[in-house]
Length: 400
Image (cartoon, rainbow, N blue to C red; front, top):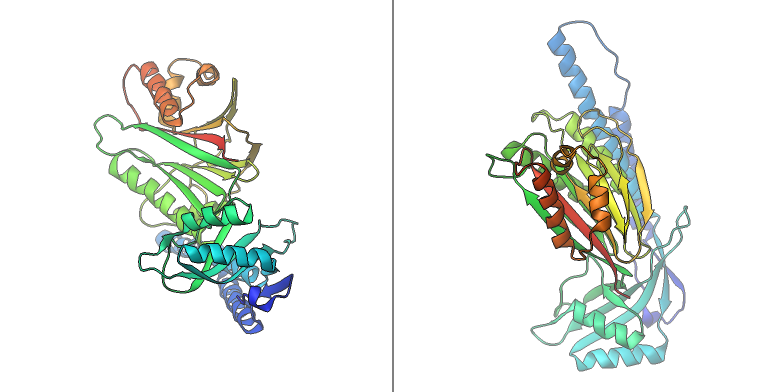
């Protein structure tokens, strides 16, 4: 990407990939498309030895997973090739003020400007990014979050380092990127109980912020219990994390993980996958489930149960996931759980028990809230832990 900043002093210039780089990316994209086309064909059932027929079917299914992955990689490369940014220079007076102030902190700034993504076909735009080319004049360097605080004061804007921004500004001159601070923050809390006679839980969870201001929370329940279930759910989360960081959207990543598990020869992995994706700028939250237990959204005394009837991962190769979208406000709580909790509560004979309990709950600390939900399940399960139990509570709070 060619970045032309303040040195050019030309306002609202457009930064795009060089024609040569763009052509290379499009060539790679075409190659992936061609390879995918070579693997894509309709399977026709053949007569013959049953084992050979099953092996051919299995091979075809694997080829279709690879084909799907290649098509998605092609789409990502085409998207990168089409990226364009509008560059906006900072007025000279303000530019000098910032560079002089940072220089007093032994930071040498050689360029600085704002970047704004051009609107996509869907009319979506990213928030402006502040690009600062600089290096530290002192050996120990300075943390980028400290630089963000200084820039916020100097430019009268709330900045935080981007998700890919290095932790420290060191002696090597390079670009550092700062983004608008999100409006909301998420405070997580967890509680879990391991199934009786087992040493490890088959439930696993992860919080991923691959793009600043967009948090993805994953909860997976491995089939069964013990080390095999733990390994299965860890595999699901690991695959999801790698795909999200590579640039896949959540729905595509879920589909590819499902297809991969459906044709895996490493034994059945029918783990559940519960996904909560939160935009920390707008407060929009999207829930997606593959066999996951119900999720609860608590807003003061109002509690909504979010349930999507779906099978676990790996049952069918091709799956569509239903998305439930809600807008969050300050002091909302999202309560995710595995079916060890819901099964224990079902012994009480009332599906509305947890909703009523959460509605009356006045606890505001997500960790304590998670513990109370776990204690409720243990009480109604008569103290027995017949399945792994995990509760993840996400508290939504405004930061500005």
